[in-house]
Length: 340
Image (cartoon, rainbow, N blue to C red; front, top):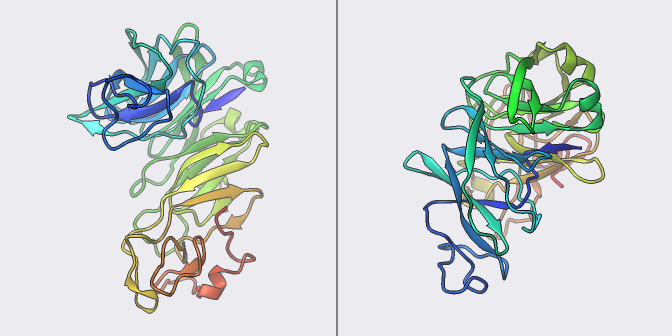
């Protein structure tokens, strides 16, 4: 099966110091995570350090792959966590930097740290966000396993050997992705071998949705390589910054979206930016849908008498050169696909 950056062996958190942290209810007299809580009986500890960790993935051998955004590299960490640890998952963990390093911690049940080795698999490409490992039968039949990674303007695929801990034979899948603004390129792969690539907005609120979308590449186009961004199929649009993508057990694609900032709308309370818009979870059940950005936003908390409930769609208070959306337009599901 293929494994995305959404799924790894063990529940992973990122900590800010070398202390071993534990939930006070289950780990004796050791320290709890400051300001945090954990399920009873689970402990955390510092696993190792990497330079500004971004995304994580685990291969069939138990190696943990990490994007080191601080160095623009893909690194492999081993030995893997012990077999008796709880196999739980945390989606698309982001880093917390301390003096240029992020403490990379593994949350386990009754598991002691061990010496962790680090192998640099790919460097020098400015990798900054996504990892996708494909160990499916389809991949094996075509020369895999593969690992997909992304920089600001390019998606690469490498032949990957988890036993020998090597990534080689660089293959450019997508090129000429627009640079600037939100620079991360989220990746997902479906069971037909099609690749999904997300790009975010250039600014806080762009004049058009042209930058903010999700595109799809066929398996045949992946194999051909050197696909120009502008020629790819538009799978979904109006997505401000889809920083995480993943398929559920039914094969449905989901995404998490960072909403815009600096929201002031005089007719519903003025400066409401602290609690609005809310961040979105989107479900992609079919191609060709528009998800609202930059014309619409999702209500978070409006407790000033104007609120109509979380995820209610509202028009963004701005004049746009190519379209004009009212609140009613934003709530019309023939025009705008609302969050899940």
